[in-house]
Image (cartoon, rainbow, N blue to C red; front, side):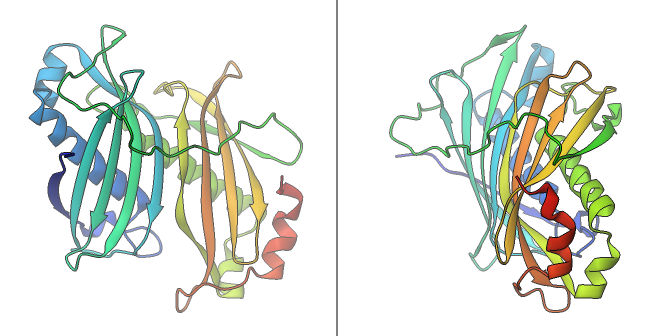
Length: 277
């Protein structure tokens, strides 16, 4: 029988985003906190890892947001962990509110390294017959229908392992999303059309750790567009032209006044049409 680890965390005022909902990065931070508690159960506390030159590095995330949360929400995080054939760790995490409703699901992969070599934890069960999310991201050659933005990765986003945690990578892509829509759509269109979009979920793959203090380029475009949703894509490229991370997220059109799904405004489609893959 698989072991489920449980921890309850509470959202705070500083966890709210511009829509007054709990920001997506808060869920990843909650998930990370729970993962650290599980590693501690296996003898790998933060203190012991730092003392023994062990780091935990994020590889990928798949997330689905199921119910909006606000300030002072009690979130139960249930965590399962499995060892993959390449010795990385697969984390399956479900978050529920105090009424037992699912709030968020995150499936992520991370790797423990010691002196540059992958470290395995013997007591963590192997993946065996458990299903694993199959990523649909396909890196795109740079073409004309993308928007390019420069981005500086601040040292202040480093964690105690001196690398970017997953939520900091999420933050880069979140900023890229804002930069794209500010330039192409114009935020004033939100009020004019009573329309905004909700981040419903997505995939992030980290191929190489972004370097704190480095300058990167973000390439953004629309992979596909439907009546009430679209799929937004971004690639992160380092100074040498190497692809270091990719993201694909699902955006749902909703009314600004009542938060209900609605058809995409024609004015929005007209502005982004040339950036659809």
